[in-house]
Length: 580
Image 1 (cartoon, rainbow, N blue to C red):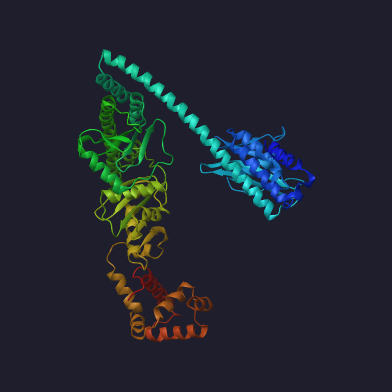
Image 2 (cartoon, rainbow, N blue to C red):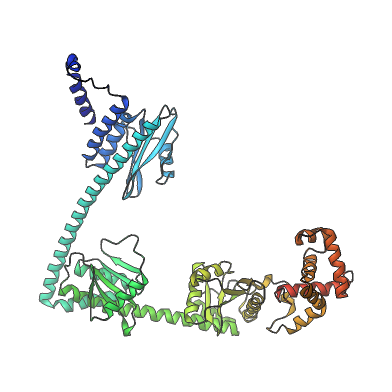
């Protein structure tokens, strides 16, 4: 078609009399660029006049040379999520080319073809996404003008594919709508016969009872409701998140709910008795015993719902309320059993009973465990915070038993919780939390002792300079020897005895003698490393160490003095937060 249009225009010009130019101003000769534009216009008309995607791609490939020194190496159409190559002159594209096109994952990119200096895979994109690819090569590097013409051809081809795609989808939607209407008509006829015998209400009730008896759950309810009404049926939780959808037209992705609008909708529906129309949906609340557990809805864009549809929706809501209440009760029982087992493990219980109960609740106690204690400064250790901890643990793959105390939440976890703090910070929206982790626990009898370790790790973090984060008991070092408990008076007395004069001197003179001594011990008494660590000269370090001897009255060369001073600086830094 393109060639015939171009030839007709060419013959029309050639048929003029040679002397015609003498009768008026002479027109300038057509340049190659003008010819390419003319060809492109003709090709565009042909592309948009073709309803078939395969034919559109073939036209573009056959006439690629009209816009420059190009050859169409390959063409691809996206079918069912995959890029399907189309034959060119009866030949399929090389496997290396197809592999390269798929590697591009929807982006444009260079393609290497033997004997061709330039090659490019160009995506054919529309509003719906990627439609396919044109792989174009050239023996010479195209000019800017030629690249511009090629880009125009690609855009026209993609637009023509979008139009063809829209037409095809419209035809498919029309066929699906016709099928659904026919199916609905058949179902309604079937129901009419049931009504004639038993009555519509009894039929609906019996169908929902069958769903409940068969254990179909939420999906069984929506399937039955869709069969009865011919309309898409869905269930959302009370926060507006989709739980199940049966029927055509499901949005993908499902819209993220707006909490404020969701609460407004719930209150509006709760004020009415039964189903309420909200835009294109017929909505009813699922609320056994007054508590809203979710929303059941029918999508009725054509406002086709009648009294039979509403009756089916109400019966389905009643059946779904029983199902969701049952699931809620199971979850509460499981949570209570988990907490009771965790409480007994922390207090101490016999192995046989613990293993039997853990197996009953689906938790493997035979593997290595850790006791984890969690506190958050802006959250009380109530059920809400315990649930947040449980969600964060599940998000990082921690298998655990969870319980809570008056001021903290406890997990008996089957994994070392490296990522729990970050997950809980995301869950709560704040990083002002502290986590203490025990050493590894290989038997049930060790759990009460490990619980004490986790609490000591938590306290050590509380008394450190950085109060927030995770502290592992097996990484505390010296504090593991210094003893448990929350009373630090003896430690303070010890520090005062060995470092008191240096602390006072630092306070009066704004000096850093204690910090210098701590750095000296941390570097193993190495002068050069200590000087580098403190960013001072070696001679300055010698002077300070001499002043430390003079002020404290302790001799660093004495083994006993040196040991006590090192312990005191470590306690001062780790447990007392480096304060006086």
